Length: 389
Image (cartoon, rainbow, N blue to C red; front, side, top):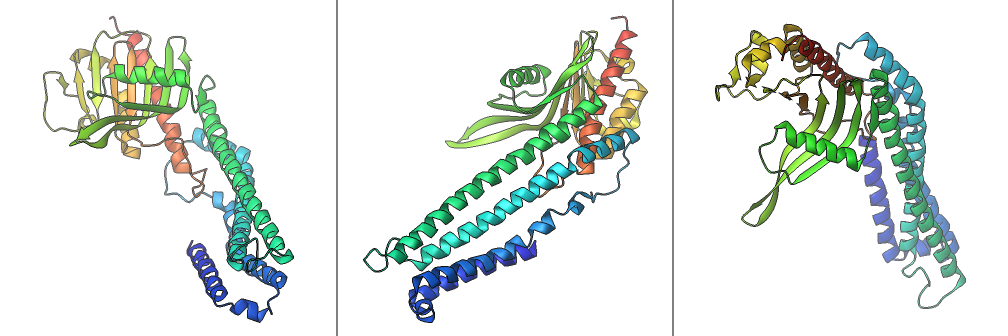
């Protein structure tokens, strides 16, 4: 990274130096006023400058980039098998896409550098002095060609960026979801599903403030069984504020939201909240048998007996294990036959070019979060079937 910054500084310095020389006509004296030789001279200088950055292409397209360097985490055998399958299927695709993108970036640097030095070399690209001539026409042709090459390189860079992102979304994330449960469907944008998610979020009772902006993307939907339907989405919830006529916004929530139907209604509400307020707020507060659960969560219910019968020790162990491993704040609200989850994870299912698309810790978080929801759904349905409600 330091080499890249140094290269950029050197390129900027050389361009400025050439502009300084041009103002004093020193370059024309050296090459004896021959404009064609001057153009060639500038192109050579541009190529040398561009080589400083092109030398990084091999470094950043090396397959060693995808040898994950993470802190030690205890993954499961099932996840490890999925992880290996994903790498085998998409590692080369990422490598080739990144290589093509960086080569295009190198072409952009070359063409842009040539364009800049040609503009510098001609005070008016159409003419030398005040007259049109063959040399100025030739210079203008080079300027146009380098300008077109710059635009083409930009188009290819954005094309490969889109390919890279779609490979991550539909290749890595889509297959990760499908390998966890073949009934699940993954997508990025769908107005109808976004409206459904928004309606479920409002009904969940997580927010008590006015919602002005609601965005949902990267959704996962599907049937867990004949009675349970799951919808998960990465959402952004915002409230607009007007304080002394200065427009401000308040981010109410940014993270993963899940809504699922269970096979029986409890005809009441149970809330497991991640905020430890240290104060019993009302009569709905429930004291649990699990000291660890008490430490991490506050539980409220309109029917306290149901909490003990639904949230059995094995369920509380699942919840505590997830929280202790990832230290991610999350809440669960169970209302009648609906269960809502909210994970404070910020953006999910995203990657950047400078990141490893096979970040094992990140993918394991996605895997474990989805598995937690599935396992809790199974427990909910099992325990509800044993209740006479």
